[in-house]
Image 1: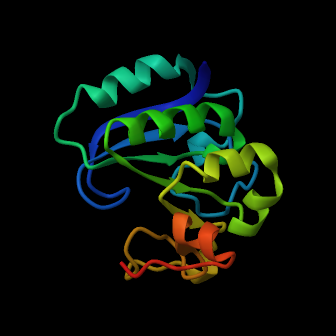
Image 2: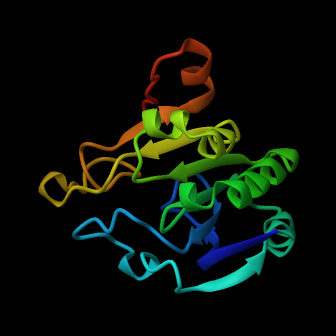
Length: 163
């Protein structure tokens, strides 16, 4: 399956805990002012890549703790990102994802919900420049939540992760 990406990072230490394989998806409808990755907003930018190639790349790195789906917004390409997330879990890796959508919005869309079912930790919400912070781990603004997805799905409410 094809996915439109802005780039890949084989050994990120800033996109979640431990050593991570970061997939920067291309395309984001939120276009948050002050975004750290504005080059990922254009849906026509970046390059097409086969998910099998990305999977082979992260499986080739024995040092990884997990993968991070970021962007852009991975929830704009939920089917392809779900393929990556399932393969990561099959490889014993955890999956983190960033989205400008709220958790509640991802539940309402069937394709987004299918991706959400494959995510361990979700950082949700748009980046808000007025709430920008450097003091909160793995977030850019205070409104963004770090959500334990399996616990949230099981409880029927949002369970935030303390990191």
